[in-house]
Image (cartoon, rainbow, N blue to C red; front, side):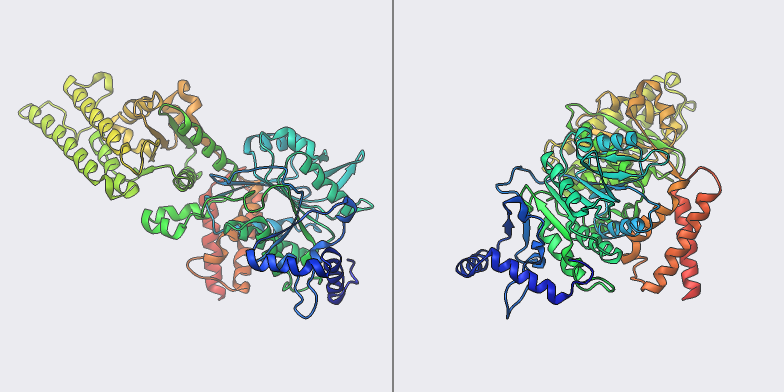
Length: 608
């Protein structure tokens, strides 16, 4: 299929392949089976010399000509039969690692392909974790493969044969190197579920053979499915393919269905070659309906409506795929242990600690973990009684009306404790009341400590009541206290809640505390419980802007801007990002990204 190939040639080739595969007596049996079962077609080509043929062109004879490989109703897929691997559906977020071999090679158009991936996945925030490596060194690649542990590897770059071995070329600054299937296998604990290789543009004398060998090398190391290109494909259709393919995976469709949909859409891409739709090849050695099956997507519109506008932010969270994955792994370890635990999320001011935590909270909730979120920002001067009251008020919002009686009982318990304390203090002009600032714990009067101890006893009883509710039903419960140190002026949060939580005192509740300075408050003894959120590196500015714009395009401020308006908006943001990469501090905060967005929006209003 070269540049001179016409659409009529493709159909003719497809009809010939169909006739060779299904001569007339078998054709009627096949058609009856398809009509009866509505099932997929799985093709295993032997001998191996048959595999290089463009089977994606399979076309039924006239008068009802149709390509089998772009049929979403009865998808076709290449496979190794019987399936060599059995697999289970995923139970949590899909981890996607994108590796750009040479970000400066204009022929790859890697930035546009990244935008397409982000756009395709923009409807499933908190459900897919995307981490991007651009021309990484060997050590960095190994570390990310090991720590991020991706389900999907998407490579954008060139293939290269090195000492007869098919590899992927990584143009790391100062020291190019070659990524092999063996390297990937050695870094991963669990084999890949899917590898997508956009690496057809190679200097090899037979680039298609090289790509096939790369796929075979990954299959020999238990990769479940491989998407590769069986020839050069223009930039525009390649970008469109990524957008459509990942968009369908985000919608929960099977691998072969997503491929059929993406191929189908390539027929209508402007300036594309008639053959482009048939270039992507999917081969599986596991059930394509299960290999990348994951839970139903999170309905973020409903989440925002029921949880409040502050939960709109995680929808646009950018540049945090790796940290999201690390926090989720830490939370999962916490939830899987037999005793309660503490996770302290800290970092500089305005680096995005709260947004990252809220994103992970939504992911945990989506995975079936009961959660309670309490935002203590701007709550005023909170003593322990008021702090516990805010936690009480958040419980029915997150756990539902079934816990209403438990919440009312706990409210009565808190009020009774306060009434008793006040009655004992009546007539004592030097006594400290719950509304006043308290001295350090060691200097507090005995009756104040007794009062606070009583509040904590009631709090533990309340947590036991709540965790017996059918919604929780013995599951560990996540309690997130955001901006937690704003309630620390009374000196009770760290000593009375966080440190005891680290010792398991509130089992089966796991507490996640979020605020700047938590590492200093908790001290070196609890340093292993601290996760620091970093600011963005200025060299990432343009990449982050591209991700942000790709995620926001379809639902920007409740509108769907036209192509011309959106081009003005994105160009303005990218200009700001480029200026930031060339000047200023080494790092910047998500708030600065929001400032660029506001400036671009203002420009859009002025020019429209």
